[in-house]
Length: 114
Length: 116
Image (tube, rainbow over all chains, first blue to last red):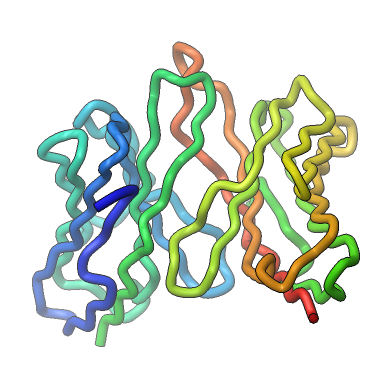
């Protein structure tokens, strides 16, 4: 595997379900991110992890719970979601020691909440 | 309030001609700008970037221009090819502590269609 991978690619869940999104980066990066992309809206940064430590939580509801066990893996745990949470969830990674932040994205998980 | 704006949701261009994608921003603290390209069912891929100390950066068929006084940047693709058809996102970042920064602010994207 190369680059940034995400599983599953598609997920349909009910409002009472609990599910998790997984992201893995094979680039040797030390920062990872979760973004949400809703229709006709900009990519919204949700969480940032630098060296496994969460450094940013962009006012994300607690029904979204991130986990970063190491600098290569990132999870987004979902529970009691709402239909308006249906969106494309993108994971990205970057190398923090470089001066500028070029982030590399995974293919995303298309989430539908019924 | 959106700090990065792409006011054209779509653009159609003939193959071989120039494509010009525009982006405006409001935060004068932005010091680095990036363009990403996104195909359907794929994540965005980095295309080209420019530092605020420059006004132009060129990479093959792609050139990004920055006009700091107007808070405007543009991406020129010449000649345009059908494979360039995708959504193009403009993004900007501010200096972080220690020089590195994590936060990219994205625009809503412009769908480019290059007609054969």
